Image 1 (cartoon, helix red, strand yellow):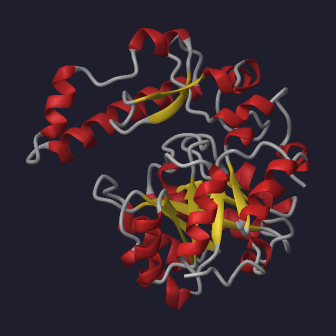
Image 2 (tube, rainbow, N blue to C red; image 1 turned 90 degrees about the vertical axis):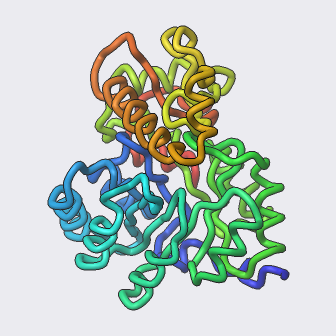
Length: 319
């Protein structure tokens, strides 16, 4: 199936000035960042899991609606599998208060799409291959986010342009590229390959508006692409982190006992959930306080991060 949406851009999909989404990042993204992004003409997204309670999530959505400006848009990222026990309440809050879009990750978006369509909320789905892209297209999502092998966090296995080209041939809905973008030249490369826009995360970690520790921000300045490695120690699923001395000491592979537990079909789900909770707590402590236990999630595009700067200044690199 040849994609017929190449003339449509992310800008027209969301009513934004520039075809860029400030990607949702666990712990990093916050209202202050999203407001700054919208004020500079891009879409911005925050993980629902950045808020411990539903009232906190609702307060954030309310604040974002109040600060929204023409040419900007905001969305919420939802983990839609069983590991997120708050998923349905988070989705209900988004539908009740109204957001511009939702990005789904790690599960079926069927229920999300069914709830959002009547509200006019667009649903974009993270995908790493053609097979899943076809499934979510059939379910009625508005666009796919092509998570490639240059993305930060949980990433795909295919190079950016190869993934874009395979998806645009396979589905008729818009393709948004995620990963491998650190400046305007790379935005243009993704658009030329067939993407309608890009999702950019790691370059915004070292922003003055992000709510993480100065040590985490400075690490994104001091380290580069060569320092990004994959670890299974956070969630059991490979995730990109900065190769700090603590990460080297901790190791990046599951031990034999963890691997054995993950092979047991009856308890695998619970093992992954426990591993996710432990890993999340580890990352939270490292991101929000000065500690020698530094497990900092980031992608290779921190290579272009030369200073801690405002969201507005970082956006200028892409436009």
